[in-house]
Length: 498
Image 1 (tube, helix red, strand yellow):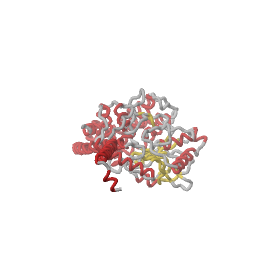
Image 2 (cartoon, helix red, strand yellow):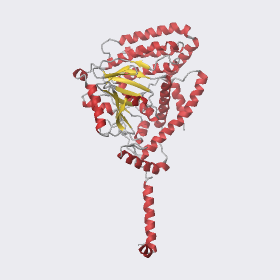
Image 3 (tube, helix red, strand yellow):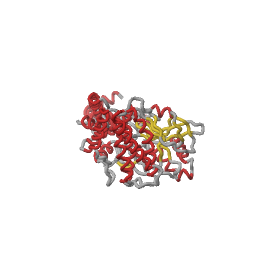
Image 4 (cartoon, helix red, strand yellow):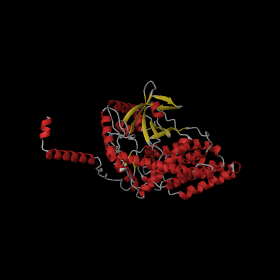
């Protein structure tokens, strides 16, 4: 053999070496061939909701500071009168036949809420008095909305203004309240259910309950804020409770797809807030079959254990072969004859859809976690949050609200082109890991380029966050309190500048 190699003409050996080198260069170079840009098709005739009330927020902050300066004793008569008006406005919509969304009573209710809130600046110890009333407000609006067409835009705006507005008002006050004055758990409606149940952290939960939460990762904030009705939640899971009272959670993660977890595992993951939703007992589907939620949860658990269901980065709720988190309850409830998310979420901002498309999303009308709170088929049973994680939540919201504005102004998601080749090698490793029942650094269903773009978004978030933290420290030193959200957003806009 050695004699044959020595006898091979020198020119032929040289040509072979050149061909091998050329092929090697081509193969290596192919690792850096850019992906074809995705097509962006946002929903037609949709516009993001805009409060358009910056002068109002500014006046409320000024009134808060004035009340704080005057002191509690001087402000108490005005605060008592404002609370009486708010209580009367809430009681006016309780127990009444279904009002139309345009009923002036809802405008009056919103005005009384925003009018009373800043007066608590003088008496922060009294903020807990507001909690049960806002719980009643939410419950009453949910009852009225049972008769509303939630897909109608003015109706959707009304529900959002009342439910998100009351939530935002309470949380602004929580962030100004004395430490530990408001417990982390706020109870809602203890909706009756005939499905198996157990008690978790003092709340009785039932099989088929939907768990809505907010994670601590940058992507969680983008999911929560990246739709036409920006919210506070980024993840959905479905609770199953067996006949022995053992709770398990069925959920879908980008790294693993659909999995069944112990309740302790679910709670151990970073959660800035958790809300429990339950199908209302008087829903026609539950009247016909009270065990429907439990049967749906059982079907979800059996499907997850029967075979691998990958994560759906496209956010396409019409096909359940792959499932993102919201699809887990939506798919099984749909199979039982009940459609969750009566109003689909939409992402129609030009910059937002451009960003989401290069991150793998191609469906811009879908099932957003935050919007499930407004679904009239579901009651809010309880919500956990505390001051520190609540401010982290608000800060991340402000960062992504500011970054989405930058996207609308033309900023594009970028990535390190020099890392594309290594990223594709890592992706190949990840594919092999998936075949052997594990997962690699780049999740199944995500391209190497998308992985690099996700890294870029994380870097953009962390850079903005570092500058925002310095700005918040300066604000707190000057004002001796946390900035309210509208001021936090203004600081985030400055921090997000390139």
